[in-house]
Each structure stands twice: as C-alpha cells, then as structure tokens.
Image (cartoon, rainbow, N blue to C red; front, side, top):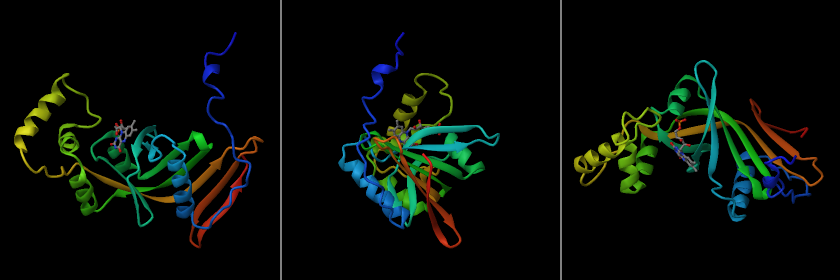
Length: 213
Ligand SMILES: Cc1cc2nc3c(=O)[nH]c(=O)nc-3n(C[C@H](O)[C@H](O)[C@H](O)COP(=O)(O)O)c2cc1C
C-alpha cells in the first residue's frame, strides 16, 4: 500500500548544491548571505522563522514570527508581551529560531537570549504600521481564550471610537531582540552528505566547526 505522504515527497528538497560551503568567519555575514540568497530565490517569506520557547515546566512550544530587522547583531521581532511566547520568554529567555529555505535546501538554526527591545525601537516600528495593525495590537489579547465570537470585533469597534486619530503603542506590545549564542547552517547535498557548519559563541569569539550530518 502506498504511503499517503508519497505524493508530497520529492517535490521539494531538490538538493542542488554540490559545492562546499565557504564559511566566512562572521556568522552574521553568513546569515546575511543566505538570507539574501533565499530572498532572491523566491523562497516564500524568507523572513518568517519558527520561534521556540519553553514554559516554566519545560514544555516547549513553537510558532512562526517575522524577523523585522537585525540591529547591532540582535534579531528583532514584534509581538504581544502578554502572549504565551511573551510569558515563556519571561521565565526562560533562552529561545531558538529556525529558518527553512526548501528551494535552496537550506536550514538555519539559531539559539540565543531574548530580551525586550528599547521602547524607542518598539515605538518607531509601531508608528510605521498601518492603522488596522495598530488597532489590532490593542484589540487582540493574544493567546487568551476568546469569551465570545464577537469579543474581538466588539473591542475593535470600541477602539475605533476611542482613537479616531493617532493610536499610541500599547505597553503590552513591542519588540524582542535575540542575541545569538549559536548558529548552525545546514545545506542539503545530492550526495546526501549534507553539510552542517556551527558557530558557537566563546570568550574568544566564535568557534567554528563542522558537524556530521
Ligand atoms: C507567516 C506568519 C507570520 C507571523 N508573524 C507573527 C509576528 O511577527 N508576531 C506575532 O506575534 N505573531 C505572528 N504570527 C502568529 C504566531 O504564529 C502566533 O500564532 C501568535 O504570535 C501567538 O503565539 P503564542 O500564543 O505562542 O504567543 C505569524 C504567523 C504566521 C503564520
């Protein structure tokens, strides 16, 4: 009997790269290189990544968020500080990030420490957003149970009246910055001898080594 997943297999993951990864010494430059390659290769949403957090009782959870900027070697995304991820980051700031680029058979794993950005960074980004997104940041009690199907739309209607003009940034909404302590760049090979190159942060700078696939 055929496996129902077979139809999906081999449509992606065409391992096109048989050249060896040329490691540069700076993992941020390495990241920038792979990110721009992915962006130009029409990868869908090259800036979307899986964010992994853990709860107080060590339950891991993941979700996609958008990388919006890299500022002073910190990866920045925006969210609701009271959300599940926000609460988990409070109790354990050690988070993980995962970028997957199927068209180029690449994956980037990053581990790091997550803290809130300066308020000015959050303000600048919030102020650049369209009105609907600003209202949404106030209206959505992200990750809380909805008390009724119209709960959210009722709040949106109230907020539209409350803020006919400018909308201030809610304190519970803003940026997080992730300072990487480890990067791993993975590239699929036709030979199946896939390449993994790791950058570990040490007192003396980045330690670079390769791992078995
Ligand atoms: C493509 C994509 C991009 C997303 N970007 C964000 C984002 O930048 N910030 C955010 O808070 N949620 C984003 N989300 C929604 C999150 O995946 C998630 O549902 C939400 O943040 C609540 O997560 P939590 O309950 O674990 O805190 C995105 C979802 C998708 C599918």
